[in-house]
Amino acid sequence: MDVILKEDIQSLGYRDDVVSVKRGYARNYLIPQGKAIIATESAMKVLAENRKQRAHKLAKIKADAQAFADRMEGVTLTIGAKTSSTGTIFGSVTSIQVSDALKEKGFEVDRKLITIKDQVKEVGNYSAVIKLHKEVSVEIPFEVVAE
Image 1 (cartoon, rainbow, N blue to C red):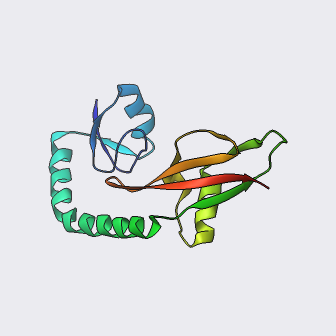
Image 2: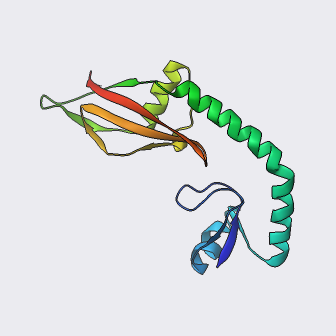
């Protein structure tokens, strides 16, 4: 079943994308939650008109995201965590800690935009990807140290 997304869904697509999903997922989750609409012929015409009117706004949003990514380029983070004597972290480092460390550096980033490639269970160097726009992302290296 084809649906038009009304908002960004991380594993599925971005706003105004037409995606194919299973009927049950569309009818039981996406449509009732207001995250998508059925891609009928009239909805596709409305989508095309909306895209045309929003084209210049999207260019500005992308330029702002790129400028923010350029400012974040070269930033490295140090995150402290409680560890055992062998260097294993009690718990793990998540996107929340990365977001808080970025906030301390002066960058306000929503934790939902941050993806950590590997599970952070030990002291060491890792990297996180921050997706600011569907075409703009920046990779931030961070080091986990023992507190």
